[in-house]
Image (cartoon, rainbow, N blue to C red):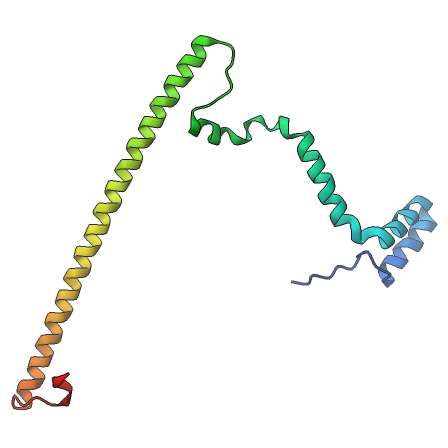
Length: 153
């Protein structure tokens, strides 16, 4: 991917041509292009500063962005309706208990699957060793039962 842009904040033929055309069409466009050529390399820092400032201002608008974190801890904003708040708290506790049960079941299944894989691996290894010993025994008997250099190891 090409990381250089045709219109970047520098004195390139394209930016000079756009500046001249901007002055001919409508002088503020040419002035804006001139400002971009001169100070455009500072735009990244400016954008970062503006984003940081607006994040602080609009943080209150994102009330629901961290609901999962709040629900996981059991804390929430009360609505003012005591009956609803009590019902919601009981439901959240019930869901947390269900989640705990599901996590336990998952852990049990993972242990079971791990044990099955271990047993299968052990069976394959035992089969390999049996075949290996059988082929070593046939090789030894074909040579007359005399062990060679390879058989001693």
